[in-house]
Length: 494
Image 1 (cartoon, rainbow, N blue to C red):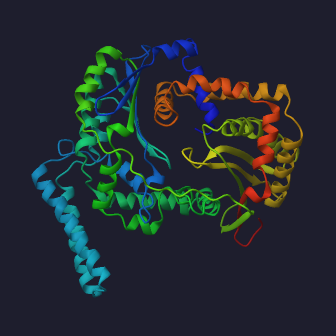
Image 2: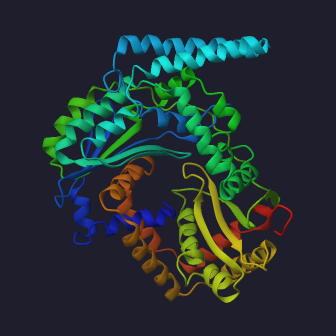
Image 3: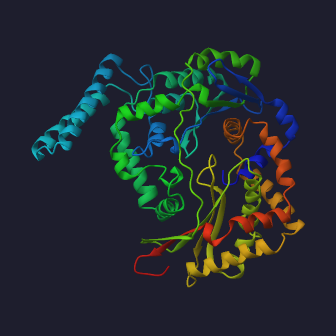
């Protein structure tokens, strides 16, 4: 979801034969006694239902020292329950408790500075306990269960602001889906926990340490957000991941993942008045949990001077520039969405045309109007990679020239029209049918005051003027509000 503006257009273009008003009339909303909001959109084109279960919890909800635990918990929710995956639950439960005891003994020995011989002995005991527990459970039971029942797209993702679980299954497997996810919400078993810690460590190595974009993103966000948790790595630091323990992960799950903090969306071959009875039967049995806890998330102080960071890395140079800005529902956030499209959406956009085509100074350029999250004030970010022999300094100069032009010269009506048309066309290309609609409905229902907001926002974008674009550009695209991160090739150029 690169632009929130795209989210609006995605909905307006979903199923082109049905206009936005017809789509709006098709959506049915229900709220269960436990607080779970359920949205259904009938679509009889195929005997498939696309599900999205989204929670209002993500990286910003993590306590200090537990960075990335939301992402870890997302992984663990696929590990099953006593009735899904266990070969002998009483024995497996005892084996998992033995794993926890062995890990605690090892941690205590390390903390008190035990001898290397004792640490080796306790490490061996810990690993043996893990092996014994693994013998009593099926690997990846939920994945296997849905695969055997014709699933497509079984996956999940965690952001700074939300976590969502998604899958598409044949419509005659509706009851299966509801039974599985109700069971997971009530009885999740975090089996193979330390094996998954190793998986997450490898994911961090690949995405954040051995990937230049991931590495640059970490140092960039750390510089831009010095107080707010948007500045922490979403996956957590290596030290934090290595420190994960089952009790801490389960405590995070039990604190946050409840029906009253979630939205379930079903798009496809559904009969709302009939199928809501099954939803109530299974999902309605999940107990209501506590409301969102007050975490006292600190606000990022206003930036008063430019911040610059440099990362040396064995990769081609690249550049990232960010400007602090408000989030929705501020009208300025919507204006920034339009600026985003004007600058980098399509080959006729200003920065692409100037940097890539005319000057041939960049290999690529992109922007994002709401990075890295949307629940709190965020960043407008411009990213680019120079084309040799041009440098990141050359790109900075050209980008700032275009931002100054945006401040001083009103965009033309033709340009605004072209941006709207390009955005609509882009959504038609990227929309993957039902899953995209399900995710977007959940997103708006959970975070933007209800799914109806989707149909109201087009009017906001259509009334944004060239003068507003100038005003917002002048207000936020300033040197003192700017964070610049540069990747410099080790032993080479920048």
